[in-house]
Image (cartoon, rainbow, N blue to C red; front, top):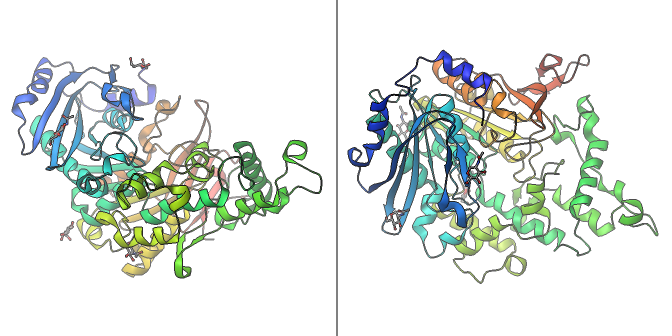
Length: 534
Ligand SMILES: *[C@@H]1O[C@H](CO)[C@@H](O)[C@H](O)[C@H]1NC(C)=O
Ligand SMILES: *[C@@H]1O[C@H](CO)[C@@H](O)[C@H](O)[C@H]1NC(C)=O
Ligand SMILES: *[C@@H]1O[C@H](CO)[C@@H](O)[C@H](O)[C@H]1NC(C)=O
Ligand SMILES: *[C@@H]1O[C@H](CO)[C@@H](O)[C@H](O)[C@H]1NC(C)=O
């Protein structure tokens, strides 16, 4: 992979630190003997040159990344940290030769995983961070390792993050002559949940936390996997829609709602204003999908269900509706395609019921949701709204969520933000001091989308062209400016990245302001938009 212009320019601005230094390489391999910590075993310690294809043969048996390309000369340290007599966490520490920044970055996981986000790690090293990743207590992205092992669930809920952060910082401070000056966190989805867990429970570990599309209110989020599969039924059943039909629904939402924000660009700036009417797609007498690309009444009803809130026993609101611009394959595959979500099923089966015979199609009902909320294993719900400790520790929290997320509704993040506001008794002007939320139009779940989706966040770096984008206004460096220079962000810059080419940009406004078209000017230019009260 080529070293990119924007990145290398940024790196040249930093003073060189021992690049190509034989002593650095030696000190790195010596970590095998020199780094000693309780319950910790060094699996590997070695120098890796920029451009090296680092492979992960241990991921052959699961869905985790098989390789990553080093984006900086660095020392790689791989540890096995024992967290109990029945659990352990694999921790990776990437330490670039050039560490003038003295910054630490912790990366997150995803799904039920299990997978180290190596691309986030290498990107962090390219920006001069010493970076840590961990496997969250088990390999792979399924719930199977939870079976009969509550300690593995505890690692997943919070302990792996906490312990990996502690040991990673210790290794970094041991390895370099200097010590960490500022600590950051960045993660999406389950990784976003982990970031909020840190904000809620151990904020003193971080100066800045970037949390994207967080799977907070975990039990509510997981309930969609059971609720939707019952609503749409298995593929081929009368209530089910195939991917082409969901694409037709997507086009219908665009027809009905794209104009609300004043610009026809396949992007909804304020999906909450969109109330789709799927009956538009209803077949007339004698019409079929094959002849008229229309839907049957049961299919139309499925669409209504997906775009409606989920209520549980006693009329309790379990989840707000899914974003009305669902198209992405991920959401279809694991959420509303009719195949039981491996995420929800994996959790219910192996964690909540601890019973391999448990079956989503036959055993899911509202009582399951109640049970999940009630047990709240190791407080995985991550729904605590008192962020006083974060505030008092000076920890900054930047949350963002894609407004076309087809897996975790963005309304969850609005809901959490407003709950924090009420529960702490702080209007947004005061939350601004330490907690800011940016809705990102045209961003799907964590990455890709039809809008200015690229904000330089977690798991966004792999597409072609992404590494060419100037990282100085990325969400991570925006957080650095907030923490280290006191420059708090009012907008978050997003780029519309299509097939490796940047086709536009938009400065996404901080909630509760709305990103609003001025009425004139090229909508692909940030200057044609402004932040307004609704
Ligand atoms: C890195 O190595 C793996 C395993 O040999 C290979 O599958 C992959 O294509 C390589 N990646 C690049 C960019 O060369
Ligand atoms: C990590 O250590 C545990 C013991 O705590 C052991 O069971 C496990 O196999 C080790 N994992 C690796 C990859 O070495
Ligand atoms: C920082 O947060 C911790 C909890 O993680 C809390 O015990 C401590 O009191 C907080 N520090 C300040 C200065 O509030
Ligand atoms: C958080 O989750 C727990 C466990 O599910 C629940 O008891 C509690 O009411 C929830 N808190 C909020 C504020 O939703």
